[in-house]
Structure formats: structure tokens, C-alpha cells
Amino acid sequence: MSAETTYADWIAVDWGTSRLRVWAMGRDGTVRARAASDEGMGGLDRDGFEPALLQLIEPWLGTGIQPVMACGMVGSRQGWAEVPYETTPCTPTALRPMAVPTQDARIRLFIMPGVSQASPVDVMRGEETQISGFLVEEPSFDGVVCLPGTHTKWVHISAGEVVSFQTFMTGEMFQFLSEHSVLRHGIAADGTDETVFAETVSDAISRPEKMAQRLFSIRAEGILQGLTPQAARARLSGALIGAELAAARPYWLGQQVVVAGAPGLTALYSQALGAQGVDTRVLDAGPLTLMGLGRAYATISETIS
Amino acid sequence: MSAETTYADWIAVDWGTSRLRVWAMGRDGTVRARAASDEGMGGLDRDGFEPALLQLIEPWLGTGIQPVMACGMVGSRQGWAEVPYETTPCTPTALRPMAVPTQDARIRLFIMPGVSQASPVDVMRGEETQISGFLVEEPSFDGVVCLPGTHTKWVHISAGEVVSFQTFMTGEMFQFLSEHSVLRHGIAADGTDETVFAETVSDAISRPEKMAQRLFSIRAEGILQGLTPQAARARLSGALIGAELAAARPYWLGQQVVVAGAPGLTALYSQALGAQGVDTRVLDAGPLTLMGLGRAYATISETIS
Image (spheres, rainbow over the protein chains, first blue to last red):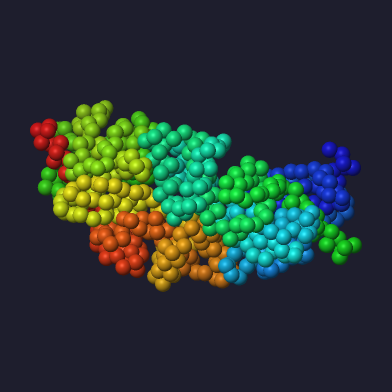
């Protein structure tokens, strides 16, 4: 790649527990290059972050000083540097990233703060940047954003502020149960069964307390009744998403809900909410992260230029 | 060890997913020797079972033919040989183990069947033998036996029969969440906090639908409010056991409940049930397995002698 096409105005970094993703950005928000690795926060000690980042962005560095805007678990206590949480209610588009010293003088690193909530006690890191990106596009949004993922967030937004939010471990439980638990023997690696999914969501919403036995019944049905691996996968995701919806009811009942995440997952949430009579709008979360980091870059570049 | 003291009348085998345990038994039920290994069913292919067993029991084999009575996942589809399920209602003390051919002529292997239930669909393998052992001691028991473990079973027993049962994945979820999920950072390896446990059980029973958010709040409280690792452990076990009790209510409400399992775990169940006004009797499950296998050995030895 030539220097002209890849040299970035700034670099965007989404650094989660298991993945590191970087983008070479133009000042106008265009993506000039991208790269990714498995050097997530979870596998690095404090001295490992800078080499892991440089390994990916080295080709983009020139003779000047490159601003790097990062969000996610990189800012947690186990991350590169701990960035204190902002507390709710707060304005995602006004969050101030923290300058973090680096060994390499060619980069100038900023890490976004997470958001915490005192009651019910809760935390987020990374999603605040996606919400900022969303609010850059829709500053007058009033309603609920659902961000399904490893730790799904339901976020109530009004007047540009995060009013309250709630986290569910649904994604992490799905991953464990489908890949590592006794259920793994009978669960397909992908695909779904829309009818089985819808039935299971409905059952889980109406009887959420039966979770731990509903999960084991997937195993028993596989053994005794020949439940197919695809139907088993649909049943597992239906059981977990249905239980989540039962608990998140105050967030979606009678609300305008935006579901932002990876496409396959947002489709499941949209279907489950639709069956409850809730209209959803689905967004791909990827661009939201870049828009949120871009917003933070704009704030910083006013200060430093 | 000398031949006189270790030579067994028969050999008892408890072969689960992760552990293999064997006992050299006297005809009168005395244990003459014991051994164990990590060669559980989960890590063996079909040809691996016999060598794994012989490695432990070789010192006990003499010149005659040694009966070996086995129960647990060794009889599952992924085990040494698949032993068909008996269906509920059934009489545990009358279960007939299946003869399974071996390469080594010095042993004569029998594997216990599991028990299945058509509706609600469910299966057990191993617990039927513990229940048989319990009924050998208390043939007229009428009530409920709770067997906490990786897959906790609640079993309704009447007139010597298993009338119905229900499985909960509580133990497997505890293990995953405490050792592998995001919660692992803040959870002690052992110990508990009785007050926190009691509070969390009570909250989980009254609002079981809040499971996935209750779990994540353990993480958030650790970060924001300094929840101690011991209190976090108590909160996790309280959340999971409380949700199980909410779902298993028809099994324990107004019933006589026997809790049989590993001592630390049965104490937690007994405390949680006690707070709901349920009197429990606690048993160590280990001897029940040997009594149940002994019952099956007695049945077989009448046939083969």
C-alpha cells in the first residue's frame, strides 16, 4: 500500500476482551485501511498493549504525531490504563477521553471512559462510544437502544443523555452453553429455526423462572426426541433471549427500540421483540463505534491544534 | 497391599463425565480399597474405557472372574456402551444392569441403565443408582430427594418408585460463571458469606426473571462497590440456587425433602430451603452410590451364581 492512500489523519481502536480492531481514518470519517488481531485485553499484561497496537498500525505511521482514539476494555482496571467511569446521567457525545502516555513518540493515545450507574449498580465500556456515534446521527432520539453482544446493554436515552441502563450476560452464557456445556453435543454451529425460536421466546417470557430446567431439556430432547442441532440452537437462543426480555420489560414495553449490533444477532432480537408487538429499527453497530470515536477525535483535535 | 485384604467380591464403579472412581467391595458392603482417576467419560473414546478401568482395578484382580458394577455416563451414547433408559414411573431398586462384553476375561461388566421421563422430557444417569441406595435404606420413603451437583435433580418418590423428576443445570452454570466468565476476576475459590447468600436467595426466589442482570451486577458491584470475593461467591451461588428453588417450588412446597450430595453443597441447599420454611434432612451421596450398586450386584449374583 502506498503512503498517500493509507496515511491516516487519526487512528480508531476498538479494543475488547478478546479482539483488537484498528482503522486508519480520514478527517472526514472515511476509512482508509483496517486491521485486526486476537490480542484482546484479556490476554495481555500492562506492558503488552503498546507492542500489540504498534504491530497493527506501524504501516500507517509517518513522520508526524498520530492521534489514536481507543474505546473498550482497554480502559478497564485490567487494561492499558484505567480510565475512570463517568456516571449516569451523562452525555455520551460530550465524554472526554483520557490522554495515556506511550513509549513510542509517534502516537498520541486517548482512551474513552466507560459509564457507571450507582443504582441499579452497573457498568459499560465501549458501548458508550457506540451510543455517542448513534447520537451524532440522531441527536434528538428519545427512546431505548438495545446493544446485543457478550454483555447485552439496554440503554434509555433522552435529551442526548444516557438516563439509565442495564446489562445482561446473555451472549456470554450462550457462548458457554453452546460450546462448552453438556448441551454442546447437540447444538449446531450456526443457523436457526424460526418457529422453534419464536415458541421458546414466548415460553421463556411467560415462565422465566424455568430457565435452568429449560436449558437441560434441550439435552433431554436431543437424546429422547431427536431434536435437531439447528432446532437445539434456536431453543437455546430463544430461552436466553426470552428470559432477557422478561427481565428487560420496563425498557421495551411501549417504547421505540433501536437494536444495534452484529447482523445475525440483531435479527433474533428484532424477531423476538416483534412477537411482543414491539417495532424495532435495526442498525449495524460497527459504524457507530467509528462515529463515536470520530466525535471524540473532533473534540480532542480542537483542544490540541 | 496384600491379596487377602484387597481382593474384592465385586468392584463398584462410578464413572461420570469428568471422573472415574472405583471401589473393591466385600459381599457385606464393606469397602476394602478405593482408587480414582481423571479418566472421565468425556475424555475417552469407545476403545479407551477398558484400559482406563484396568489401570485402576488391576491390583484387585485374581484368578477368578470379577463382577464389576458400573453406573453413570459410562452407559450413555458417548460412553463404553449405551444402556437404554428405563422410563418413569420406575422402581430404582429393581433396575436391571446390562451385561457389556469386555476384552479382558477376568472381569464381567454390568452397567446400570439411566432413567428417562417423557413429559416434561428429562434424563438421568447415575442418580438412579443413588436413589436405589437410598431406598434400600428407607424403602417406605414418600417425598422428595434433591441431588445437587453438576446437573441437580429433584426427584419425587412414592411407593418405592420414581414418580417424576426435573433437572437443573445449576452446578454447571456455577462452575462456568465462577471460573470462566467475566465474573471470575472477583470470585473467591471457596468460602461463603451466609448473610449475602440468604439475601440473594430470597431476591432470586421472588424475582427469578432477573437472573442475567443479577449475575452481571456481581461484576459491577465488585468494580464500583468493593464487593469482596467471598461475598461475590455467595451472591453467585445464591442467585443460581434461588432461581432453581423458584422453578422447583412444586417439588419442595409442603414436602419432606432429603438433600443428598457433597457436604458443602448440601449445606447451601439446606440453608436456602430452611429460609423458605422447609425442613431438610442432609445425606452424603457417596455411600448411596455404593449401596445402589450393591443392590444391583445382589440381583445379578442371584442370576449368575
